[in-house]
Length: 114
View 1: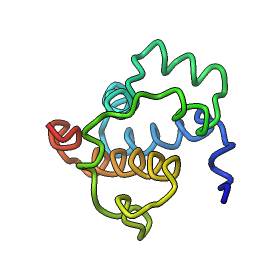
View 2: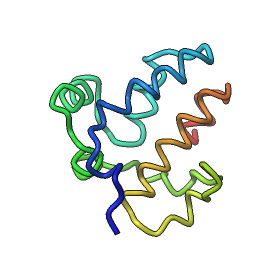
View 3: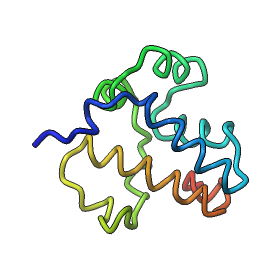
């Protein structure tokens, strides 16, 4: 089953993540740090994906997912991230969960499962 989000550009959703962060007093640098922890993309690689308009499918296909990603548990929109079957959707939900935790004021070391 293919979800519409798979073909959406990551760049089209990034501003929503950023707005959520800034509304809650967090910074772009913190958002980018969470994305780097999850995907392995440094600032230059992230900027290249944003500029290119990479789809979520391409974005996560190029990512080196953090080996500690299984430590991310809980619900996003009523769905337990650890129970999502599709690997791509699970990675997207992991990112959503990290963004939610950070925007809710959770300390960075806990968000990054440190």
